[in-house]
Image 1 (cartoon, rainbow, N blue to C red):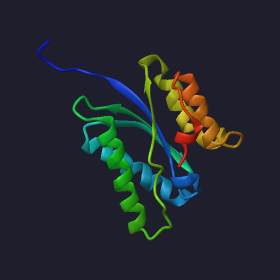
Image 2 (cartoon, rainbow, N blue to C red):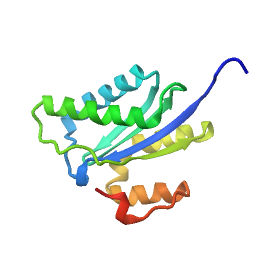
Image 3 (spheres, helix red, strand yellow):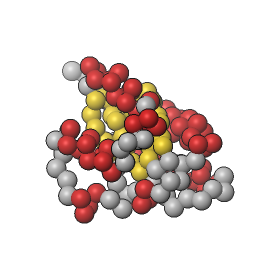
Image 4 (cartoon, rainbow, N blue to C red):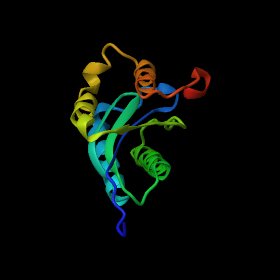
Length: 148
């Protein structure tokens, strides 16, 4: 095949450092738009972005020319600068992240899941949510290495 083609959907999740409640409601829309712009600059397209006070979910189509780790690093670094420029209290993002592949048939389900984060987190902590995602995707993990 002479042409390189891909269609990779990624559900990306990461929290604030120590899962502190740092993402303020009045910052959410700007933060989400900023992340969408970063993705677009990396030839990746945001499908849905939502956050609650201690973590963010990003559903996007990963460019065939970019690496996931580069995009995540850019998102974390750039959004940290944005938040600090606004003079808001910020200790940063956790060092790790969870990234999960999403099939075309599950895209709307994951999209809806991300849209309903506030309701979802009335009964479930970020830690329990991430544990659930890791188990659902058959990712082995050790608790002592997951949290920072």
